[in-house]
Image (cartoon, rainbow over all chains, first blue to last red; front, top):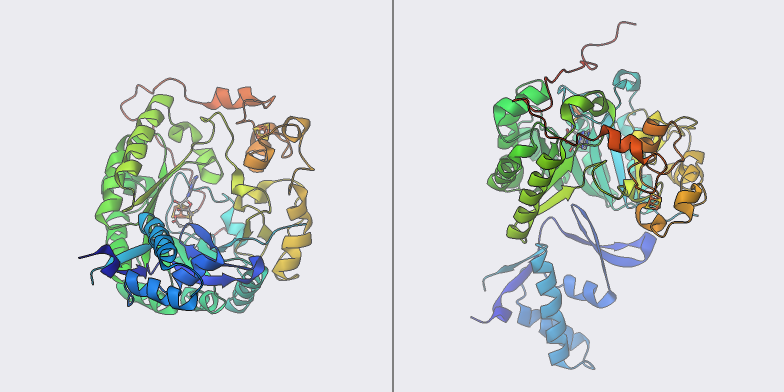
Length: 94
Length: 367
Ligand SMILES: C[S@@+](CC[C@H](N)C(=O)[O-])C[C@H]1O[C@@H](n2cnc3c(N)ncnc32)[C@H](O)[C@@H]1O
Ligand code: SF4
Ligand code: SF4
């Protein structure tokens, strides 16, 4: 089974939202706030537990035909990996 | 000029059935009986969210004693806030926890006094330990996020390993090992609770090893002890910079401990919107930024890192809240802190000598 078949899910204790006062997307967690870039926010919104990593990459590639798919793939795996390491995203089996 | 606050600390009541010897709350807690009602708290929650706060921490005293807690959680969620309940879990039932989860409570932080019931209940002044563990498991079962908080001092530092194991066993995602800050009752019990350097160092080694071992499973946070580090704690991340506290009566403070400082104006949400007080209130302006600093801090490269330390500690030890925190080695008052440290390990079997509890919280005051 490839890692890309797994389905990343934003943990229930981590909430993605728009922070109007600071004009940025954030993930709010019990102990603080992670500020996201616009790209990060786009990826985070797709971590719904239904899409696999591959499906997340597909969706972004479709939305950004100008960007090479390999670059998108690397960015997504890196971003998801960092959130997994901090416990804010879990990877469900396919 | 001010940035928006990131979090509101909502101290709903100072009433509490426990008598923790280390409690940092004001010892004259009975003077805060005129509590805000549900409607005003709901407005304050909305105003905090509009101002830019992302979190609300419901605390006290014991917030569970407010029977409108469910409504306040709902009001906070409706305003878009991430909701955290900081609690002793006093007699909380599964039904109440379920109602709170239903209202939208995101996260619960349960405090424990120690790793075993006998020590914990002795320190809390009442039997609470076993129930806390049940409640913590229930929090998890209901799908809410769980933190455990343990306040550390001479009487439990040696069991920090067991406390970590306890937090793991109830499934906490986060454990706060908070070395005692010397306010309120803690200050009154300082002699009994002050750790010695060796005990602290051993506990710290255990905590840091656990943090490495549990990375990704449970976040282990070691809150550095006052007076033993060579740098002051960046108290509240800077005065009026990231946190706003509303106390039970509606007074708005930059820090829950600031109530004891002289010359405070004590603006209340009963009279002014929260945003006005945050931006313009005299109490918030007083130690905001660097303009108030003594030359020691004003000329120091760490002034934007630790913000000159803790104002309450400066006042408690020197009588002047605007002085450099005496915890800082650069402070001209640093010897005050050195004198208060317990440099040699205590030799008595019960470390720190007998624990006396000044029972400041018992019964209503005769008026
Ligand atoms: C004052 S209590 C109020 C909420 C609730 N009664 C409780 O104990 O969890 C808020 C938090 O501060 C912690 N705390 C109390 N006294 C402290 C002190 N002197 N130093 C550091 N933390 C303290 C408690 O363990 C708790 O996590
Ligand atoms: S620390 Fe203990 S005494 Fe203080 S408010 Fe919390 S439970 Fe009550
Ligand atoms: S002198 Fe002031 S700013 Fe510098 S380290 Fe000490 S407390 Fe912090």
